[in-house]
Length: 344
Image: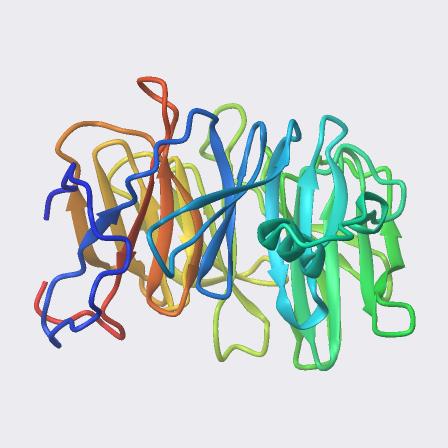
């Protein structure tokens, strides 16, 4: 299936037949700024660029609302139940939390929008590289990778209604580029993180740090793409994706499968998506693979080479963007037929 370069209806009918091939759609809106991240808020898409925050109205005519200008947004996650948008944003790469109700007022242009009540910074953190929000029982943990440390905050409900400091691990040997948190056997919390050397873990109880996978066949640095905590393994088994491959190990670094997931080309973006599959975006194609085996479930060839970046997903919809080539970025989405996507 080719990546068709066409304008599309932003609200397509979702009457896909059981065996229809997933299709890729493109929103008409061209972004002059580089699209860096996005998050679904209801049916609509909040989009972070290198120069602001906008909302793409997916429920109607694809109207774009500019919410915050002259601020860079590198990463974001919406927590609707807590009325917050968690971001890495600004020149200092702070963890800044915006209130969704305040953003909604800006969209509706209602009276009494107070600037000072619109957001709050988490701690005095600067230089955040990546964060992950992980739910464990009724607690939401915010794990933050900084230049040489990992900070963990926990959401304190009302009356506090904010993230509060929980644990801190400083002076790390390896700079965390991606972070995650697993709960082993519903009892032990463990931070997982990827660096340019490999993948590492921190036991929260003992604060001990150890390597879980350091590739020995790679010359120089690696690019860690994502850490997948495999379902139904008590938080103990992982798929670690880096460069153009992925390895299966447990949280103690022991190989669990004698297979390596191998992408057809070096992906610019890799993501574990809600259908239980893993996707890789390369310059020539998008590949969809089984997270359990690494086997190819489907591939989409591009009409022309292009750099694409994963943004976010929900259920069977996956959103991604083109890199800023030819002066503008565009946002695409595809609807996957889950599970297993028959008859490709």
